Image 1 (cartoon, rainbow, N blue to C red):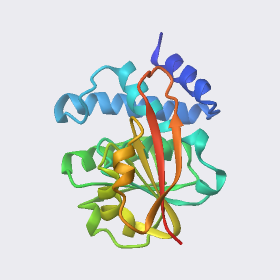
Image 2 (image 1 turned 180 degrees about the horizontal axis):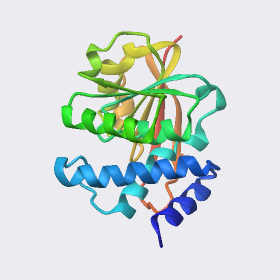
Image 3 (image 1 turned 60 degrees about the vertical axis):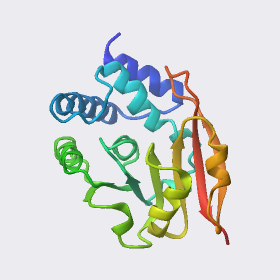
Image 4 (image 1 turned 90 degrees about the vertical axis):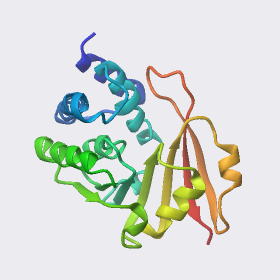
Amino acid sequence: MTLGIQLQQGLTALGLALPESAQEQFLGYLMLLKKWNATYNLTSIREESAMLTQHLLDSLSILPHLEKSALVARRWMDVGSGAGLPGIPLAIACPQIQMALIDSVDKKTAFQRQVKIELGLSNLTILGGRVENQPAAQCDAVISRAFAELADFVSLAGHLLAEGGALYAMKGQLPHEEIARLPAGWHVAQCLPLKVPGMAAERHLIVLQKDH
């Protein structure tokens, strides 16, 4: 099976109807990731097909669960973005959002900048430095994927949210103990099981908001 067919089947399984131009950008991203990974070791996953499933489709698996209000002209930030996951796939799939990526590792932000240039992602901003040093109240949504425990996510990135915003934490198994350790003033607004085509492992999206 070609990578393009695998991508089409994965998008269909997720219920996502995306234009051919977006699918070409997804494949272009995977080619860049494989190329840079040979030198910079951005991910332990080496094989394109596995990258597509475990990185690309995993990142996109949240989209069927997001309401339109979360995606129209909204400001997103992907913290601890690493190889640009999930921020780059989300920016490709949703050109109507503004997506900022932040990572403190120079080789990772260099890769992200190259992806932005080569794929022409005008809705993508690359930020270096540490999450906790970013200016406050600049985002409607902050997302992380394998970044930190929920309590640390809140303490490091909670200040980034504008009024009414939400933190989105992509997790594996439902992290009951982490939820129990959430700091005062925060609550779980939603806890959504994710289904990633080609992956048997449990995945969840935890949506966190400040108490009113």
